[in-house]
Length: 339
Image (tube, rainbow, N blue to C red):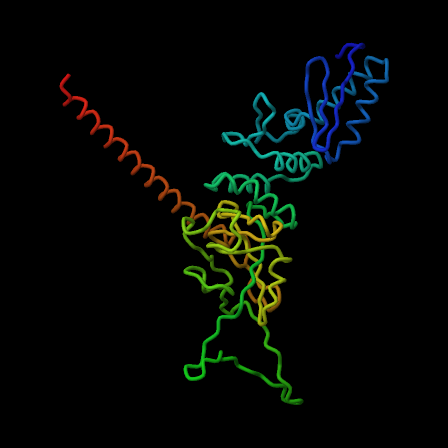
């Protein structure tokens, strides 16, 4: 229990609220749902003479600002903390970013299931580019992209119908239908069973079919967020893809694994990204006769993940062999030197 003469010093700036009491320093980010409550408890602590009331306020304050206390008071044992209150997924060594900690704590405080966020973080830990972690969550938060139970997220892709062309005229072959009664042209209906293609050409992803992953080698994608239009498979928010303004445009709903995100360009206000794989599940402006779910993508993704891990291990072993060979060469040279 805190001494009756102790006083909580509170400093507030644009980013956080700092709290000091008897050498202890705690803090809370501004905008937290508990900000008003926290300031109320601090005021109550500093104005009451009742020691029991002070103890109650202090317990509430520390529980509010200390993520470890907020988690350990719940039954979820998947998280752990170090001495600086950094939050980790148990068994991992990379701290969960602050923005994700805030989201997790909000879910926990409201008794919401955190499985989707946990799985999302697991996928993100497998992303070889740590810089994408900050970029990606900002993208999702800005656009309100839903995260699925298995940790994927929903995005959108603008494409056009992939048509055959007349050899003589070079014109696209479009089957036209007319109303038998009026003779009017019936507008073409886009179908999930059509094949599509992106608006921009490239070496990969030129044929897009719903229900089939679209991939390109990660090493051929540009991970520099300062370069806007560069190599990679592009997906984005509905705001981004809806603004293409092309005729005969089709918008696809796609699932993306966080581990396959390469970059979120800086100058599109968090509305588009480059990735090395996406999975089309439906078209938004046409007929969907089949239902594709994240479980369908998970089957593809698991096989690809196993393949990626095998390739990673092979590259690691090759590096070790090269280091060992170099070491043996140096040992031999050292032995041959005559002092």
